[in-house]
Length: 114
Image (cartoon, rainbow, N blue to C red):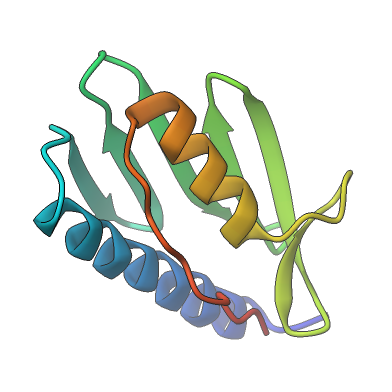
């Protein structure tokens, strides 16, 4: 298992890349949403009042995603963040959730995991 500090650095890097992707997607869109990232928690406030929250869960070394469609846990597997139940990558799940819940298409390239 990776150390706590390695996990935090990797998780924070992933959250920063997602934030950059959100900014880029918003530049070419008329979707109204706000997002913030602080202390390992990325919150996306959608136009319709819902939220998408992605946070690091240090004890389990996972990223947790909460959305209207459910909760998802992602752990590092072979350099990628994978859902602990379905095996789907974080990129695919988050892209789908943001499109369904916020109406924003956010292209995400691979989000490397430790």
